[in-house]
Structure formats: C-alpha cells, structure tokens
Image (cartoon, rainbow, N blue to C red; front, side, top):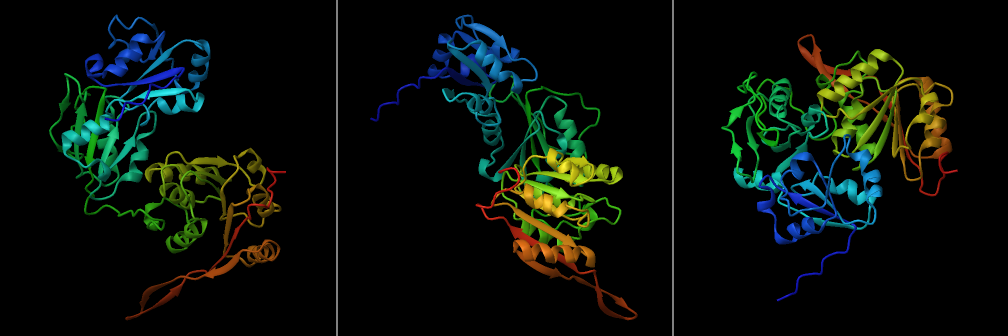
Length: 420
C-alpha cells in the first residue's frame, strides 16, 4: 500500500464545509480546525463548529476580498484555519487566499455542484456552471443555448425568481427549472420541476443556500443566438451604427480573441464587436470607447441583454481617454479614424504580440489605412457583401458598401509606448 503523503506545512489551512457541518467532515479537516489558533469564516459557518474548536473566531468583514491581506497580516505567525463552502478552489475563498500566500493547505469538501449533479443524475462534464454570487444575473444570458444544462450558483434566496424572470425575458420561458437547497445537510430539499414561464412570481423565497438547475428550452419565436461571432443584427439595439453580421464575423475572426484577453473597441457604436469578443469566453474582457452618451447607454443595454454585463463602457473622445485604460491585447477601431493621432495612439498602446484591426467605408479613412499598412505591414483587404433582393418579379443582388480592413500584429520584440 502506498503511504499517505505527509501533511503540508502551511500558515493557512482552508477547510471546505458542507451543509452537514461538523458531522460531514473527515478526520483531517476536524484535526485542522481543532488545532487552529484562529478560525475565520462566515457567521453561519462558524456557528457549525463545536466548542472543541477553541481558536479565536473571526467573522469575515464585508466586502470580503479587500479584507484578506489585512486579516492575514493581523494574525501572522498563528495557525489560521479558514472555513469555506464546499470546495474552496471552486468559486471559493481559496483563490483569494492562494493569491495572497504561497503557504496554503486546502482540505476540500464536495461542492454543491457535485451534490446537485448526483441528485439530478446529470454528468457533470455535460453541464455548465454559472455563478451569480456577487455577479449580475444578466451574465446568465450568455450561457443560454437550446438543450444545454446549467447549474446556477445562487447569491441568495431571491436568485431562483431572478433566474426565472431572465429566462422569460430572453425567450427561454419553456426552460425547466429546479431549486436544490441545503445540499448534503439534514434540511436538503429539491423542488418539483417547473418551467420558467410557470414559475410563480409571488412564490416566497426559499432557503438562501441554494442552487438552480436549468434545462434550457428556447421558445419557438425567440431569436436564435449562436456560440460564435456573427449574431443576427436583430439581436442589437442600434441607430444604424452597427458592424453588420458578416463583416462582424470576419472582424472577430481576425481579432482572434483568446481566454483572458482584453480588447479596446474604439468608436463602439452599438458595442457589437466588444459584446461578441466577450461572449467567446467568460474570461474575455473588453472596454468600449464611445463619444456619444446616448450610444454609450445603448451599448450598456446591449451588453446586459446579451449576457456580458461586465463590458466597460467609457464615454469620451479617443485618443484623449486611452491613457486611462489598461493595456490591451487587441484593438479594434470602428470609428474616428480621421481623428488626428488616433491610429498612432492605438498602435503605441499595443504591446508586442498584440493585434490591431481597423475597418472603414470612406475614402479618407482608407487612405490612412493604406499609409499605416505601408509603415507597419499587416494585411489590407476589401470585404464586400451582397444580399439577394426582389427586382420586380425577379431577384437580384444589392451590394452593401464595401469595407476596407487593415489587420496587423505587433511583433513581440516591438516596444509599445507602455514598454518604453
């Protein structure tokens, strides 16, 4: 038999705790809590510990995340045990602690997601987990696809009703819902299945410790939104300032978003490029710069409706506001190319290895792109799209305005303005 690995020497031990409290903990977790000089957790979690856990009990302040460094510093040199819900490294406090200290020992407990998959009989790898803890409900919209199964981590007892309302508002009213409460504890409860359409608006909130299981069903008349760039133009509220569907898909293809990357979208219009950049992966980030306040508000509404409420919208003039933004991984310029210094400012801000894409339909801006192509290289292309339309009793092609696109990558050894 292979011997068990020795316990880690760590200043902080993170202990995962379930709804079953002390009774559900293995021996190693109980020992860590008994030996701790300081016990840190939420009031509900601390109340689950027996008197034999004699360490000083410290409740997390609110907001929690900014308090972590100070709390660890205040108890430096003492044995600290931090209580977490379920698996501390799955949307838990473990991440924040790992970022603050390298001496971390983690003793996980089954997460609510694992319990939910077991109760529902859902293969966990086939379900998508969306957390709404400390996050807007609108972010759930990006995960809505017909036939998908979602496990939604609730912020509190009101979350199930908010989820039902969002599903109805996004054309997914037929989706099936169940709420699973106090998973793994004596008060565990799984509600009867209901559709979002039938979810009682006046239903009293249940237990705050809950998870919502959703089987997505799109209403027949709802607009179908795919998982790749090129959403229907009808998905956006706009005043005509919209990168149209086929050009948008081609543009995002060249921008090539990757997980965790940040996009600057200059001259946002309706925000479609930034929105679809962020929809490619939950960790993708974007900042849209739009000078017109009405359009800026419209971008915010589009981002909220399409499931990326984290899109940052900056109302102001580029390039003046660019110095205030974090360094981008990619830049898209969809408007304002003739503003003196804009294109050069975007190029200077771009770090080595970054990408820049600019689109235009005017001759004046096209001349600027041709000059930039001469100086920096890259690819200069003309994108043309035509749509079949009635011509009397026949059908003919109606040509949209052609779009000139310059796409360029900055070589890794090329310094940006921020690198100098």
